Image 1: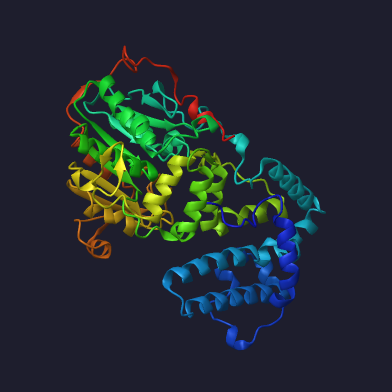
Image 2: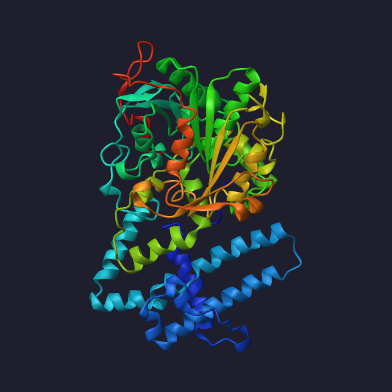
Length: 531
């Protein structure tokens, strides 16, 4: 995927936005014909216009109402068009980018909150906003959090452990036991390679890694390298062989166990399932159970991301980097931000540049801004075989590591988790994996989105999740499912313990004679910044 045209590029957004808004300012401020007005176009229902400043002045209130009404008319016109569903969805996505950018809230002259603050501070807010804008231009991205508040290994990714294996693609971390006894079978975690692993180990109170260690599991975790040009030749098979399978083999060698339990998150789950398909084809029974968190194996419905993928785009990417090169992490970050521009772009523009407010310290957004590159051949293979042609779910349709992969051959118990409001992995798509895998399936649906749904520690007492017997269709499952308050982590921990083997004495030191500790966790690879 390449980034869509980027009106939020810090180097040019102000100029382009000003040009567009100069032409539309009069239109937004001019009362619309009454038949365009909609009862639900009240600005107070949209958080961009929720502040009292919008309602205290009739002109700004009318501007917000007219903007919302125009937006609704344009969106409705696309829905009423005779185009096919995919074309409509693509047009809606493109229109939303334009409409979000042209919001009156995004321009100083049409934002009463920013104007009022400028008057109250004697222009200090504008000066501070300009300073932040200049700093962001230098960084090449919009600041979402206080980057100086966090440091990997100091106050994020702090669970104690050691790197016990490394190759050119990944480091394997073994975490220090927190209990006197541990389960015989270790847990191998495969995080997504498009982000740094520490989303699973942000801080002690919201760390899935620390939680798993506290439950008596010997945890091994793959820390993917932030690849540079030297690794630009690596392909999908390398991520399976040198990544997932190497991690499983190393964990088995160190622990002396007969099998491991394995967990994959997002594309890490896709990699894990493919690796297990390879192992099954080889007749190697190395994994006792598999956990997939917000993972797609069937790419029939990929949500809005899929709207950006077509044959022409994939062919261009293959020509540019398919034989070698890098997909820069910044490109992926722009794509994901565009899916939720009113959450991940424009609020930071308004608060930072128009109001001069420094972004608060937030560990999740610090992680979100820590970009990770991908090798071109690996990315292009994934883009074509998953998003474009949807071959992964077809038995034997792909050859990976020399093996025809069939997910139906993966005959191990599987715990599948999805998030109900996930905009990256639609939960109904994640549910389709229940019909692809060969083992006993447990499916759990959590509240919230792609990240917040997963990172939901029990102590917080937040949200809820749904459990129920697997059925043929996702909606039928949800209709019959039971809502359970709180985090899904305890349900998973209870399930995992059944497959983790007997309790044995915790290892006294990390690694083994063949795999000695190389350096303390979190290791070097996770600290490498995208070049």
